[in-house]
Structures are given as C-alpha cells and as structure tokens.
Image (spheres, rainbow, N blue to C red):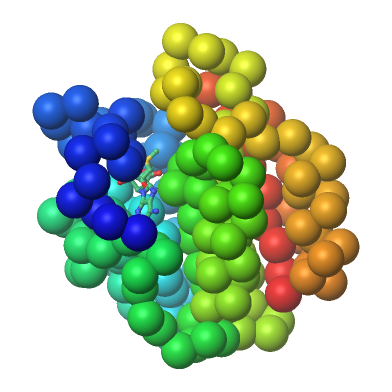
Length: 171
Ligand SMILES: C[S@@+](CC[C@H](N)C(=O)[O-])C[C@H]1O[C@@H](n2cnc3c(N)ncnc32)[C@H](O)[C@@H]1O
C-alpha cells in the first residue's frame, strides 16, 4: 500500500486533514469510559489521536501527523494479538470489499483473544458526506465477519444520527 499515492485516501484530506466532527469526540468519550488504564489500546486510523494522554494507546494513521505512527494499516507491523482493545472508527471503508476484508483481518488479528474491537463504518446512506470510493457496509457483512472469526457482538449494532454503524466485538 503506497501512502504517497495521491489518489489513495484522497477523500480524507482534499488539501486538509479529515476534520473531527463533534459526534466522533462523543464516541471516543464513551469508548474511553469502557477501557481501563491497564489495557493496551491500538487506534487504527486514529485521526487526531483523541485518546492520546488518556489511555495506554498507540494511534496509527495514513494521513494525520497526530498519529504515533504515520503509516497505512496494511503496512503496520505489530505482533498479532498484542492489544487488549483495537479501534477502527471510520478507517476501514474504502472500496473494493476485498481490501476492506484484508484490513478487517488485520484489525481483528491485532486483538488478543477475549479482547474488544470497536468499529464504526459507513453504510453510505447519506451520500452527501460520503466519498465516491467508500464501500457501503451492509449488516450482512457484519454478520458474516462475526461468524467467520467466531466473534461475539457485545454492544448493539447501532445506526447513529450521523448514519454510521457502530458496534463492539469481543474476540
Ligand atoms: C473518518 S476518519 C476517522 C478518524 C478517527 N478514527 C475518528 O473517528 O475521529 C478515518 C481516518 O482513518 C485514516 N485511514 C483511512 N484508511 C487508512 C489506512 N488504510 N491506514 C491508516 N489509516 C487510514 C484516515 O487517514 C482518517 O484519519
């Protein structure tokens, strides 16, 4: 994956970095309240790295220098199962679905058995705030991945006001 490819992730900046909406801050607050200081957290596509300084977190992002590691998630080299909690909030959503599946495989792989994975994806219901190359997540995708990896959904799969799907897996 070439992070310097001008077409790759272009919708996330368009000259600027992706801006954090207020809803995203609130989601991070809720998630932070569910994680203890002793847990090791990986935030994949961390954007502005909003958990930094609050929890024991490593933030990676292909395009935001606030990250601890400015790197594409496909190139990030971490020990499998080395994190208690992995977050992928809005970062696994670019076509084709074969790429989404490879990325999800990595996200799940970094989480230890028994650990949690917090997800937020775009089902592309609202085209106005959705980039052209976004993959439209479907509920069936969540069902299929849950079964394929033997995961448990431990928080209700919810459609947010911003028309994003959020849920939490336990591995
Ligand atoms: C919609 S933003 C969400 C940022 C943050 N998670 C939040 O909720 O505030 C998605 C972020 O994921 C990053 N991202 C997308 N694809 C990525 C990839 N393949 N590897 C690393 N970061 C990626 C983008 O650069 C962007 O900062």
